[in-house]
Length: 206
Image (tube, rainbow, N blue to C red; front, side, top):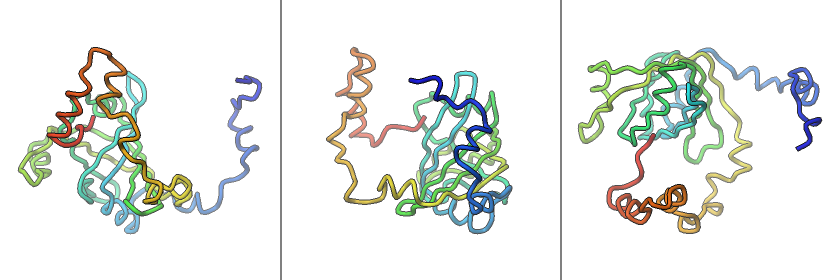
């Protein structure tokens, strides 16, 4: 890589790209508008980005639409469902409360970004209020205080054709998750892992 081509000054970057598109500034809010809240209520999927002592992490979270609860215009709560107990996201939040969230809605090109701070809570009444259909409660919840939120236009998803049925990839054309893990550690029994997942459902979240 040509080090001379590296941009290291914010001013140089701004000169290269010019001024922001006006709409990109208008859309940024310090609280949820009713329209932004409607988007989050419809979302069954969000990516959580955090930073901690071990570095950066981006972790997917999913559930029925509305699984991320809107408390008020500046507060979101999401349950931490059973997972693989790595607790990367939660460990990061304990060390550094900053968090960024990216919400997606199936079939919708726009995405929603929320930036703010988070804290981990094990308040009994709160975690019990997130009991699922089987009565199972999360071990903890994340309480997010919103500092910035804004919608992204559909360009990225349109370019990726993410929701286009014709662009869907046949799962069998890629290595299974068991095969991926066995490639990391030869002694790992990938076939047994895939078999267990097929019997129990999908792999748990981080």
